[in-house]
Length: 465
Ligand SMILES: Cc1ncc(COP(=O)(O)O)c(C=O)c1O
Image (cartoon, rainbow, N blue to C red; front, side, top):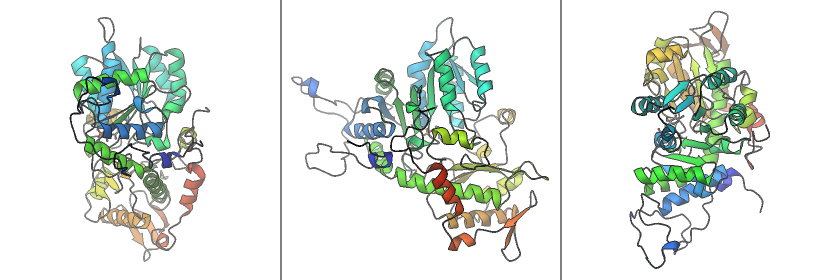
């Protein structure tokens, strides 16, 4: 049978053996399932903490997305729960009198991940060494300086600085010098549709995603998925899920199965919007280094001007829909994010939703990282993050432009003909209105040319590397 595209497999839930032949899988809210002591082997469920049919349907769908058997997938109550379980099940128990569990993680991490790693440091003494994982030589030096590394935790692109981590290269290095080190990938920024680190060669050990983001896409549930390379790893992690009751609830599992069906179309539209916006911010709004102001910048892996563009493209099927830009002024960024002119862009944390979101990471998603540490890691306090939704790109641009004008960042000149960036003196033709009549932009061609999911049928990008 020909291999179906990933867009298709997440829509199709297959036959459910339902007594009424329902075309949508039913939700099993029951916490208990009757036990037949004469036929225990045929019994798949007894208590929902241990297993639930609706959660199984979801785990099967995620398995199809990552091309692993359903048994290798666990659906849990949040992305942070996923990381907690992975670390408890695979890393923390490695501690002995002579060895402290050691983790290497990036230095541009989601604030909640940083908080959990700090918590483990204080509670269990597991050490996390942070390094800029987008700098391979630096990573290698740090790795080699440590006695034994139990786990490497990777995320690419990083959030919100959009740095690209060469996951295939790090995997080749780690699996060659220390095969027992577990390599874990937080794939939330890409989703299984854009990247499958389990199919790289060599592959990582475990991938997890905050399903709260792209997989569900509607910001109406919290969830996490853990996808293991082997059944053996999955069974160690299942032990923790079953022991703690961290499995995703039946109702949330059902909602997530539904959300997943539109992943392909949502992500396509979100990425297209992100692609157009990133080019517009750079070219028309002037968020790029100029001779008078080096502090303005647009950060997005889909920009050809990004030095890591080719690297990202080599193991991903799309750029994702999170981008950020440095205005060069903390006060102006704050005014932009607080502007009452924002009607479409919602000022909230998170990403991956059908609605477009705007935030100031240092005050929101990354506020849990100590300001001193942010400074040490060159985290720009003026950074504004955009997480594109599926709305019409013309409306998104106009809404953002109105807020940038309100915040005195951009000035509209000559009856709307030009955009002038007050902070770095960049002047360009205003393309916002033009696009109302020409919704198909040249940038869409870039997207199609650079990322259209040529390889997504097999999702093999990177495995050839
Ligand atoms: C990259 C990344 N990983 C993990 C998480 C945690 O997921 P959750 O909020 O579902 O616990 C987030 C949340 O924002 C995230 O951005």
